[in-house]
Image 1: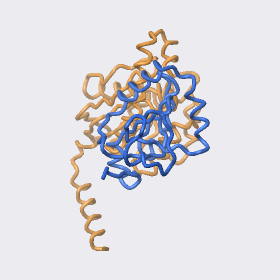
Image 2: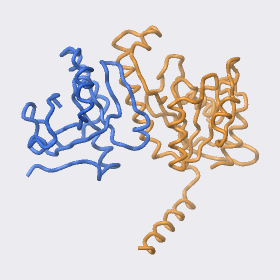
Image 3: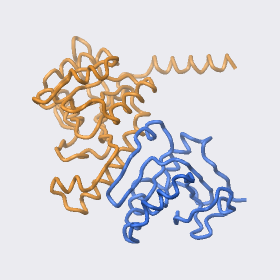
Image 4: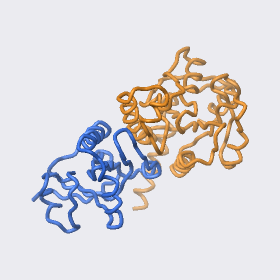
Length: 210
Length: 127
């Protein structure tokens, strides 16, 4: 029994050691409208010269998993190649009437709500496939939210390495310090995916973390 | 599936519902039965059909019709067409995806459950 366990452990260690760095998948997770796609676009335009998807002020713009393969970043003399996985925003409530407030027609709003719900399920399923996660939070909002706590708690429990990205620090109402205080045990970086502020710092951490 | 409530030990669990013939059952705790009936009583037939279609669109139905499946978890509730309440904690905890729809009907993502919760499914093949 002990031998079987040891053999399994050894096999897992060897497979980890020889895993190609280009096979690494980094997932962007977070609540709705926290700027995941804006950050994904920033990373992709910086290193590939093209976007990954469309970002929007209307919630749940990203409703399907989007993957950009072989993103190679360089920082501090090191490089990292990975597949970037942009995921739909995690939400506890999805209501088509919220989309109607943004000018959508009822039928389209209901369709969006359905797709967004499916997107949440898909995003959570995909967690099994990622090697590292950037948890993108909106630093203008209260970080102690059920969705944020659930995501972080689960990553911690599953031992998936992650960095908390306090996004939107360019906004006046941003309080990145509140995010740090809320999650003092986790690595937190304040950035603005929109303006590019401090994104270089994030790249530094990424090449070191994976 | 049709909303009919059967007692725990009903023979229908093995043979399929005597109302609709389906073998998907959802375990509703006794204390939740009233709440479920209250939530679903105002739904029109059209809304129920709309919700059913939404569920089919959201979850791939890879289940085998000859199997009986009983689950006791709700991860997503559809209050009305286009209005969803998601229990992210349950979803993250890799528990089976069960969609509870307003009519008191339920569908599940069996493929997910088969992968993750093999031991938790009450599943018996028709003899």
